[in-house]
Amino acid sequence: MLAAAAACLLVALTGCGSDDESTPTTETTTELPTGALSSRELVKTADGLCADATERILADASPPDFGGDGPQPDEVSASAGFWRATASEGQTLVDQLSQLQPPKDEQQQWNEFLDLMEAGTVDYANALVGPAEDGDPDGFYQAAVDSQKELIELAKASKALGLEVCGARELGS
Image (tube, rainbow, N blue to C red):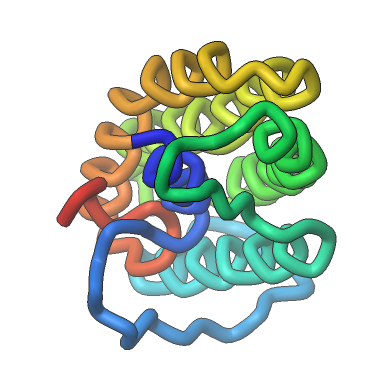
C-alpha cells in the first residue's frame, strides 16, 4: 500500500494505476493563454502544464522506490527531497492552472478541480514531507492513506473535464 500510495502522488500530474503505456503526449506551454478558453484549449493547456510539471519534478528528484517488505526508515527519509520538490512544483502548477479561464459553463467544475488539484499535489506532498524527514514509516503510511480520498476525487474531476494527463486515471484502475 505504501509503495503504491507513494508512486501515485504523481497521479495528480500524470495519472496513475494504468498498465497502458500510451500516455498522451502534450505540447509544452511556456506562455499561458489569456481570455476565456474553449474546452479543448483548456484541456490541451492544462495537460501540457501537468506534463511540464512532472518533467521538472523528475529532473529534480527521483520518486521513492520502497522495497517489497515496506519502506524502511532510511528509505522513507531518503524520499523527503522528492516530496519537497513535488510540493513546490505542485504549487507552481496549481498557480498556473488557476490563471486559466475555462468556458463559463465549466467554471464551477474547474474551481472544484483546482481545489482537488491542490489537495492531491501540494497538500499530499507536504503531508508526506514531515514523516519522510523524520524517517517515520508509520507516520508516512498514515499521511498517504489519509490523502487517498482526495486523489480519487481528483481523478474523477479530471476525467469529467476531459483531462488526459492531469490526474485523469482512477487509482487502481
